[in-house]
Image (cartoon, rainbow, N blue to C red; front, side, top):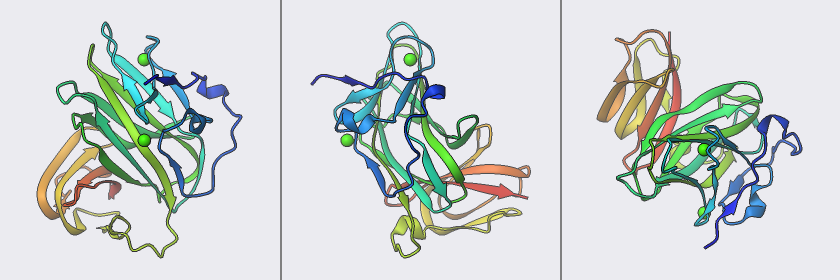
Length: 241
Ligand SMILES: [Ca+2]
Ligand SMILES: [Ca+2]
């Protein structure tokens, strides 16, 4: 199947698309027409960047250089009720790729998914709670890999707005208290919890738990990456005071 390249647009001059404020917004990357208002950035200027392949967003290797690329969503108006979900996977498990996700407001970047090594060849569904953000943001998928790796795919991008009447398990998942002075409770036993500091370094991890204790950690902002027993990945920001 032919690959459909997304037109490479300088993101700082792409103001043509009005911010999206109607939810849910979904993109299954099945058609280049869905890519209007999405933009790519070839960070290492090697000529390779994100394109559509196999009905997904695809980032591919360079045989001679490490790869480094971004794909940016359109702007979304976030009002404190949104959740982002997307799938990610790689082409070959022996060729790991690194994925990081940011919010981008047009001038600064806020990390919402710490650097994650992608070795799964079947999709993992990532859920990111955006309820603490209000304003107009793009989602930036930032990918890097060593020289001559393979491919990373992103699919089934969705931003939903919770109305407060959802009784979905992901919507019910809670983590408290937040802010915390140490102990953080989870509303269910989860398969794994990873805690990252704001520089993206993993500082704690535990398995089959329904709480984690940050007492030994410095005050500050942490990102919890939680893998539930049904293999959903949930990312939440926790403040320790
Ligand atoms: Ca798809
Ligand atoms: Ca590149």
